[in-house]
Image 1 (tube, rainbow, N blue to C red):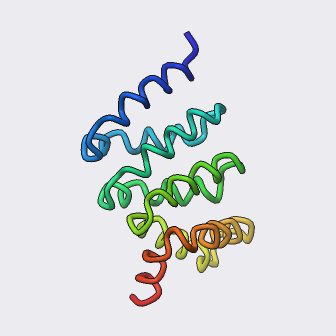
Image 2 (image 1 turned 90 degrees about the vertical axis):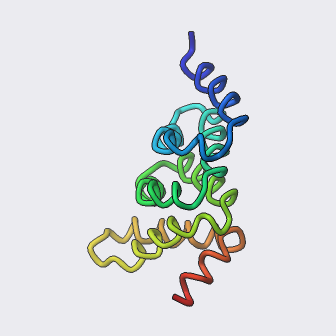
Length: 134
């Protein structure tokens, strides 16, 4: 049996659950954002986009790190998840903003973090505005 098909079938079942019930699997969803199959990445992004902000906060660093270390496909999947989260993406927006200003990070990672923030501008705007006012 193809593991990708199993992941997709499981994702379809998970979509029917209450977002709170998804919280314990949040790190697994982040992990599946780097799956080689686009359909699995999309399902993982969709499931992540349903999570509440407290759960997002627990995986914010993982998402931000994957944004600057992952492939273009991984970044696209993360962007999809963050757009779906909207203002609930605040913890990830904060992590990305810290990365942009972190002088210890390499310039490529800083640039990718800045690009991620730019790509989120209208979708995570409320989170970014709140961060700017903090």
